[in-house]
Image (tube, rainbow, N blue to C red; front, side):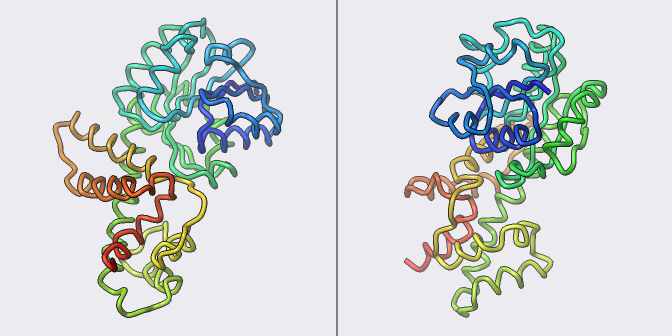
Amino acid sequence: MKIGFAGMGRMGAAMALHLLELGHDVTVWNRSTDKLKPLVDAGAKTAPTPAALVPGNEVIISSLLDGDALHSVYEGDGGLLSTALKGLLVIEMSTVLSKEEEALAEKVRAAGAAFIECPVGGTTGPARTGKLLGLVGGEKADFERAKPLLDQLCRRVEHVGPVGAGSSMKLAINLPLLVYYQALGEAYTLCSKVGLDTKWLVEFFSDTSGGMNVLKARPDPIAASLAGKDTGAATFSVDGIRKDLRTMIAEAQELGAELPVTAATLKVYDEAADKGLGNKDGSMLVGYWPNKAKG
């Protein structure tokens, strides 16, 4: 397929590289052009503006940082909505408020394109290998049109309702994991004095009722974090997690609800970022709290 892709952050770049490997004709755009070289080396074309992604392509995909970036890429100067979109399929994959996706869908459809949202669960590893979890909001016919392509990006794709439902589900599935990192760190605070090997401890925790899938999916960085060691290159950074936690709290406020545990966890991530850890992998939060207690 001929695909235009806006947003070459960690996730966008990983997905675009996977699509290139599958033989798709991919044109990419990113605000910071220094991130485009690996894509160009892999065979991607580049566009000078988001609007320049439209001519000659069948599908437009966007994977953007936040609601402000979403507004800029679609409605700013040279944005996607500044040109005719008739007949296109737009797949929006950012993690933003559900109301932001709902508002954008109306404008994209008014411009003549089909629209679905498909925020995804997973980090850069699954994105690079087509093993993400896709959460689609949109009309059933538009979902069916997009599904063959989404099946190449995701190990599982679910149509969860109208536009906005995908965003709600994405925030919901991310919340327990992000809170769990802090909960596991607090748990380790209680038993760190025992002096057990952290790799063994992670494996043991994964076999208890308090274990989560992440303990089996990412045991090495979690064990390294508990041991006070570096967790390696970020797949989902502390700053990215902070953005998602703020979005969860804002989404709850839209519903007239509060998320007190999430809000308390955000304070710890903010504290870690203030200490210069914002670009580190989120798994480092598991060790941040107990190692902080050691002084």
